[in-house]
Amino acid sequence: MKSTLLKFCALFYLFIISNITYAQSIGDPYQGGILFFDNGNGIGLVVSPSDQSITNSWGCMGTNINGASGTNIGTGTQNTIDIESQCTTSGIASDICSNLSLGGYTDWFLPSKDELNLMYQNIGQGNSLGLGNIANFSQNGYWSSTQYDANKAWGQDFACGNPGGYSACGNQIKYLKNDIVYTRAIRQVQLNCDN
Image 1: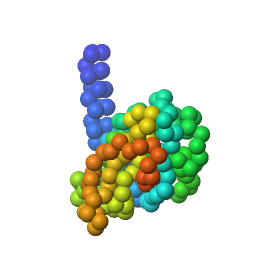
Image 2: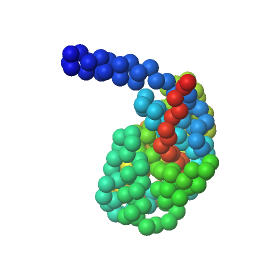
Image 3: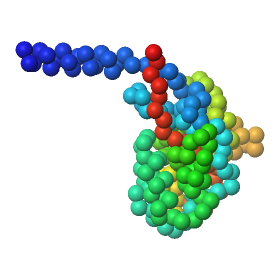
Image 4: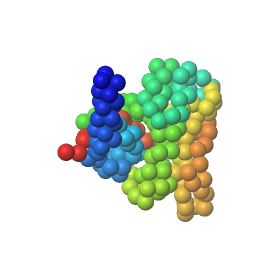
């Protein structure tokens, strides 16, 4: 009897969880940004609707930032915290994001390498969902919070069909930390269930 009850509870739980839908879709404006990721369990990521900076560096050239090497989705927050705690230079990419107040929210951070790639693929020039560049990304490179080594950090080139002829469309690039690359902040959000 106890085994049957446990199996019933497990099946009921799976049925309820698997049938939850959310009111937001990739590409929707939501909580200060544009939704570009939904993990299927009510957690998403939004990107700010415009660039935070077009003239900043990653910072701390020649310094290894301990812990700022997370590449996966969900590691951008900790990377940003690690950069901010070990690199006190103001005006660098992580500093701009972590000090951003936009749309009533102050919990912005610099995306990890994989988070940046999802931005490119889902709502940028990558166009994998057929939405186009709805976030209006520039034809330039963007910083991630993922450090490569003491002198380089990962970024991604959003230059696709650049009129000047240069295009590294979608390539993830190891930029020198003192290169001037664009910055776009993101934040984690809780999605609303459909009724």
